[in-house]
Length: 277
Image (cartoon, rainbow, N blue to C red; front, side, top):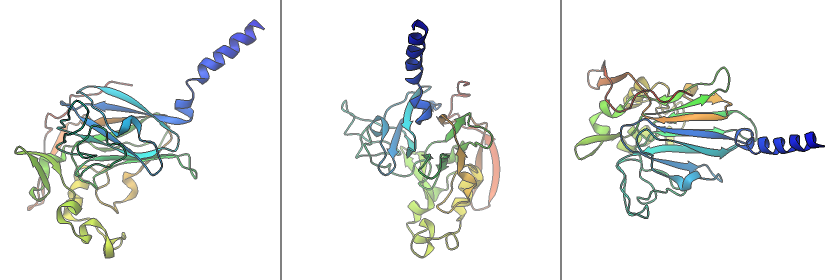
């Protein structure tokens, strides 16, 4: 009887930790940038939005977010934010949401912003799908990498600082500094660049010169609405690491007129390797 009681108590203790791995996933967010960022989260249709949709992360900080099985949503980083003591009445240089509030509370971000998108299982498939998208433009390098998950799990990422080589027509500047790079859709505001109207299909909407630039610099990310499926990653892991400003040794300089490329030492945007796991 004593052994049975001990076994039962042990089972209760172990089972208390199982739901986060069996019934959902852990998202480990890492701020590898040299400055503070304000991650924002938006749950998909009918899904919960963790952390009220936004919070602060200092340089070098990590945080864990538990999401339920079949959760879908998007995460992006905001930079240069200021809020009052109530987390309102402010603004961010990029990725702003909810009228300048710390908590996005179910609202999307103002582009340009590099977006991590994911669907962690569905009623038709247990597989997890995730990607990094530049369809809304770019503001910060970011990657999403599974911990475990088996063979075939890939890394979705835009690891290079696109602001360095952003064409002047797409630049977003604050105080003379380029803080974001618009998508061609946002900059041109036309059906051809937005893949809408008569261009709302893969045959009619082809990658533009700007989309080709994004793809060349960040081949692991979606560059426009009908980009090839190689940027969509598939896995079945219990934990994923989302790193803002992931370590990268090179950046690109691009002469848009001459279509010439050059590799340059990376700008000092990240702190270096993240903690091993």
